[in-house]
Amino acid sequence: MKSKNFKRLDSIKAAHRSERTQSSTRVEDYLEIISELVELKGYATTLDISRYMDVSAPSVTKMLQRLDENGFLEYEKYHGINLTDKGIQIANVIRQKHGILLEFFELLGIGYDTANIDTEGIEHHLNPKTIKQLRKFVTFLKANPRIIENFKNL
Image 1 (cartoon, rainbow, N blue to C red):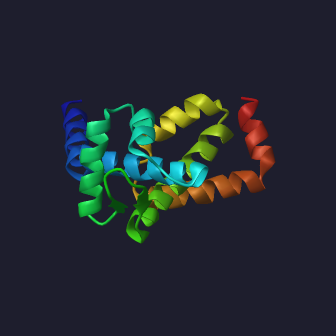
Image 2 (cartoon, rainbow, N blue to C red):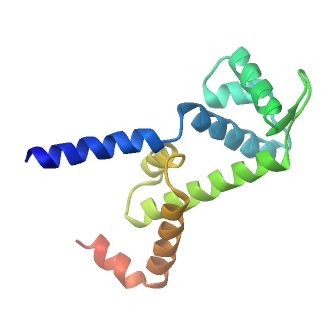
């Protein structure tokens, strides 16, 4: 029994060692929000981002400056916010992960609202190999609707 507990502790330690930092998750959240706003409205403002991220406008400004310095977007105070190719690429990867996870959860019969919340909670933490396998599994399930029906009837 003790050996099993040590294995669990080791796995937790390894996950924390390899887990992406809270900072990179936050960066991805900002890029995802900006991308969604630009697609929806044609532009993103500090105020819009502040509302959707539920953070203060000064916090948004500080993060936008950081994202600009790291080449993810072009930001001029009181002007529009534009993602660079690098920023667009990361936002698109996050959106793809989100879509795959959301579709998987919905196939499991989880309601949209719950599935969306759960997806937001884990989309930044999954290895690309895991996402690739989930995409293949979702495709398999959709090609075999009887499996989905059998599962839902359990």
